[in-house]
Image 1 (cartoon, rainbow, N blue to C red):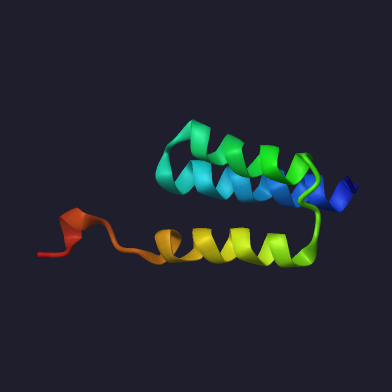
Image 2 (image 1 turned 90 degrees about the vertical axis):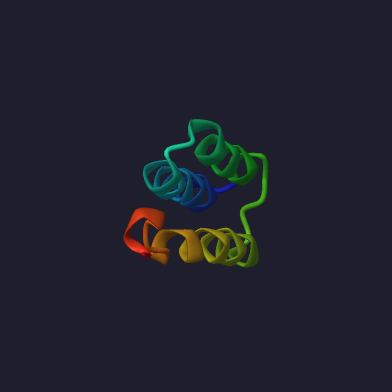
Length: 63
């Protein structure tokens, strides 16, 4: 585990938490990165999984 991996995990977890408002979901990302998923590929995969949800418009505005 590296400091960068932990930082990316926490950062991805915070983005996931603030956009989806699901605490367990954000914690899962941080836990995965903490457990040794500290590669750039893993970070890209995590960010790629978060990005579509972050750019999605709220359902209430899609009339």
